[in-house]
Image 1 (cartoon, rainbow, N blue to C red):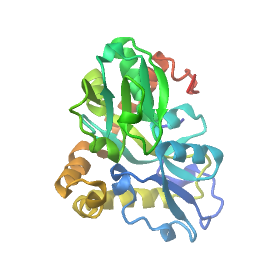
Image 2: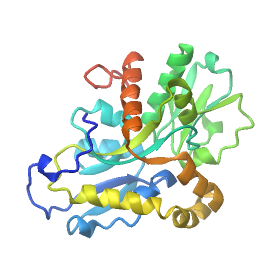
Image 3: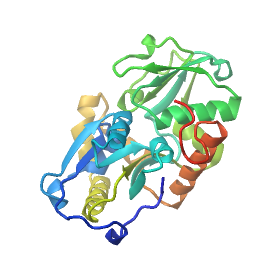
Length: 281
């Protein structure tokens, strides 16, 4: 996996500037600024944008059903053919609010961990933090989309996305916001998702469109919050704070350091081999 974010279309062999592309994005609030005003006609006639869970987007990109996707960074790290093509990303420097690990017991006593089925990166981050901090490697099970924490037969449960922002924390022994925990451990931002391809893009038009959308999204946070908050059960104020304070959308030098550190920690915990391949699920 290359973490370069190329902007020079000459880096890719030109095929045709008119090839329609299949683009996949995450249908969570945290990704809305990245696709604000997306216009496929700026790329090529027939270019379309679809939405799905992060884990399913990763599978679709790997299978060739998508040309470009906003994928979990763990997938970008473990798939040798993935290339990051934009400096637009989903990241945090501190509390992220939408990625949380809920403990029913002391973290050091966790034996069974339920992982949100939509997650790949946050699942790996949970295992990194538990292993690095406590030397714990729990048995893992999946928490299906639509299931609540009460449905999970586990000592700890990972939730990601919009539903993590609505969960009552009072019944739990401890709650980790994984963005905050990562910053406390490393002093670095954490990158959750990035735009990746498996095969070269025909030209630079899609990269320009993705970054135009990101910049427009950053200028439209309040409008996005007003549009999206009611359906999520959030206030507009909560949504604005989340998008403008908790999240970062630019893959800068510190974010790249955080990404490299995450790779190293995954290798230390046996989640990635030195060549980037996943060691286990």
